[in-house]
Image (tube, rainbow, N blue to C red; front, side):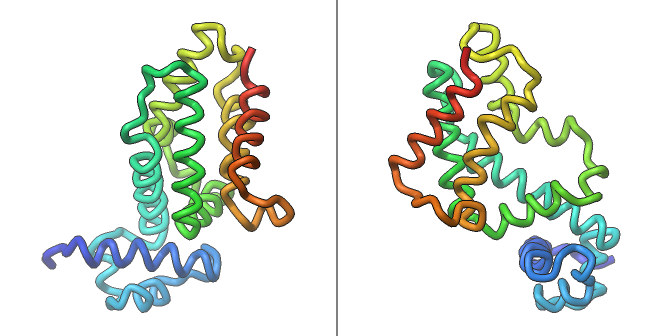
Length: 190
């Protein structure tokens, strides 16, 4: 049995992001990914069962990093609006700095691979946001609608704004970010 090397696993994850972002999931072969990671195709099977496992594991690793990058240090004890604004800014900054990772997660979320995930696993990545929205509803600050409606009207706009491919004609300046937050806040608040 081969000894697992964390740096090789990480190289495979990074290569998966790179290859999938260039070619898509279907054209991203095991040999292309292994080549980009500078390992043999057989090495991939030391770390992952198959290509599907690699693609799903890459998504889960990216979501874990994003969750950590956005939610670590968030003070959910702040007033709801202030805490949501903090999450909003952190999300914008994270997505802006990690565009390749974000592109991969967006492609994954719109692919058949998403059916292989458990809802509980996905919700765990957003636990601070879910808790904060529930608190906002309980305190009668936010509208009492399905959580996904809050995500659609509050969280997705910042993901779109942070993605330059989605906002060609909008200058991303401090005032734009503030205006976008206010529009999203107005959509979900009572």
